[in-house]
Amino acid sequence: MNPNYLERAFEINCSAAKTWADVSLRWHFAIKTFALLAFAAAGTRRPTPYCFLNASRLFRKQALSLLIAAVLLSAFSACSKSGQTAGHSDVDYYTCAMHPSVRSHDPHGKCPICGMDLVPVTKKGSHASEVHADSGMAGMNMPGGTMNPSTGSSDQPTEFTIPLNRQQLIGVTYTQAKRSTVRSVLRAFGTVAISKERHWEYVARVDGYVHELKVLAPGDTVEKDQVLMDVYSPDLVATQNEFVDLIRMRDNAESSGSSPTRENAERLLASARQRLRQWNLSDAQIDTIAENKKASELLTLVSPFRGVVEAVPVDQGRRITTGDHLVDIADLSKVWVWAEFYQDELSSVAPGMPAEITTTSLPGKVFAGKIAVVDPFINEMKRTGRARIEVDNPEFKLRPDMYVDVELAVERGERLIVPVSAVLPTGKRNVVFVDKGGGKLEPR
Image (tube, rainbow, N blue to C red; front, top):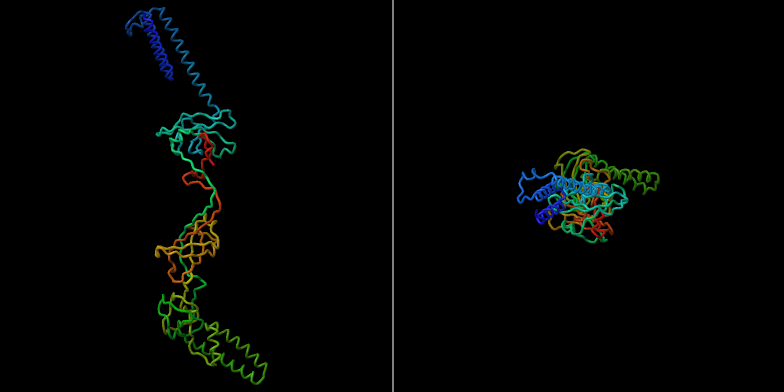
């Protein structure tokens, strides 16, 4: 027997058994060592499969002793491995280092969101400050970290640890949060509408005929006090003649000194003047009739302001009756813009806020406006609320029913700001990670 050969074989097999932690390999190397010892004791230079069967009983006993020792060694290593596993009894659950909302009791589980291996989280009040995890991100060879629960509610994100070298593999970068004045912009679409305060519809208040039409089609620009049409009405002429007779009666009563007759005439004059006003006669026209003491055969309708003809539903010479629509005039020098905002944006919209109006029809043109009213009612179909914006339009460039874009500058005040890329939305809340030093990250 060559002692050097036996010692070299034993050292090779023992070193292999120490290197590999698998129990089956320990069995393999133990049996191999036993066979070599038996062959060496028998003096065989080149072992064959049959030599092992022909070994003497003495050497078989020695080999059996070595086999029992190998079994005990394997059992010891298994116990030590189970002891290491039992040392993880302070693990509460396993979670994802990037998605703390994920929880599992499977130590070999994967994150259902990103596929990263789950890392252990120690139980609250545990003496172990960290539990080292050997797991990594699937398919990326990126190791995970450890997590420690906070003292808050179990629903709150917990602090966890990712070693700095592993953070470099992930590509984690840091920036400093700072306080600054925040100004955001709300964008919405809107529709131009005619201001109700600057829209006038002439309706026939007396039966008659359209004698002469001065405006012919929608879109005609009219100035203030410009004649729109002349209307002939027999009833209106009779009322004017009655008004003239009352003026003469009042003058006669004044000249004769009859106070009761004069007072009665004044009351009747006031009633006749009011009736003429109801028939679309202006005070200036009534004063002209009183001054001339002569009734006018035609009722002249004039524009109350500078504007644009919106509609002319009558024709020249047509008979009209009380309530017929005659002509519409709109002043477009100031228009309304109805802007629609989502219901979660309405809390930032208030009367008096300035607004900027733009439209693709007028590139580069910006109209300034101000919110006048916020409609308290929500559209049940679109789930939006409306805001009425008053906009100056001296050149009539904004036209009714035109689509426009609305921008509101909302001042949020001084706030703590972080980059958008640092915010992780979880569904119920937005989370950022605060660097606590030493690889520790705290979700907030």
